[in-house]
Length: 344
Ligand SMILES: Nc1ncnc2c1ncn2[C@@H]1O[C@H](COP(=O)(O)OP(=O)(O)OP(=O)(O)O)[C@@H](O)[C@H]1O
Ligand SMILES: [Mg+2]
Image (cartoon, rainbow, N blue to C red; front, side):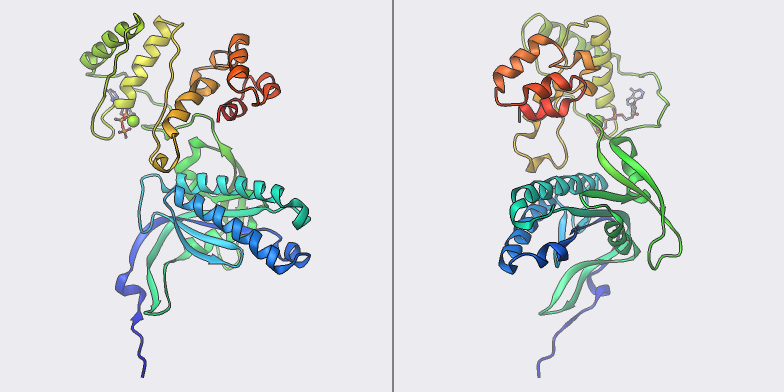
């Protein structure tokens, strides 16, 4: 007799707060109806490849593939400080990737290939359930069901998130409040937001919004940075490392130097590249970010300070990226995205 060991959820499970992402190809039944099953399978396979790679890039976990959809967790089994942000970035990238895939196969599918993405953050119980032969790592709880319902409500080619995810990311997102949604099987309506993008140059906010205390007790450190800056300004490069515990004031110290330099030496061009916690999987991320920084009005300080706003800079950009989008360069003096992409 073959007795399989039961994997009970309580044996290996733990309670956690995670961000759940559901993505599903919209109108797949209608598209598949007009196609040879092998051709459709190959397109869905390509779509899964793109979606799974995006999830892996943000260190999420692909929990399950369902038909032409995917369920992913951010926060289990590996947790990061910024899981809601990773999930939303992942969702937006998936939408773009599947849009591109749709364009590539437009002739075959005869319709737009679009993905709907739903995201929610909340407490779940995660663990391995099933038997020795058939088991999976899964999460159980209301948070998962709500993410699935969000996906069902999302318009094709869009990302819909709940207020529970939105509250972690509000300063970073361009999102539209779609109000309270009545969800099947839920007594209370859930507030949802349609994410249209990420604010250019936005970084996670620290401290209390609207309140700013004067900087205290960093005179020596600031003086040292000032000295190094003066040497660099005179033409001799200098490197300074600012090290410290999380929240000790590294960003604030650099922010103070930056505003002082902007005040006293307006001709200085400040280039800033930021490492991201998920940047390890993005090739040359820091270098690309450094190159993009002066193209972005939000990070350059204001639109007219951004590289590309001046005719001479535009000529340089055309020279280094002759096949970029010169008309875009002219058109979007206020928008960095096209110029950023001209440089890769
Ligand atoms: N010397 C200071 N005087 C007043 N406020 C400060 C000082 N240093 C830091 N703060 C405030 O403390 C908060 C945390 O500082 P900051 O974000 O610069 O830390 P950090 O070292 O960059 O943290 P992390 O390692 O997480 O990036 C901010 O709101 C900042 O304005
Ligand atoms: Mg910091």
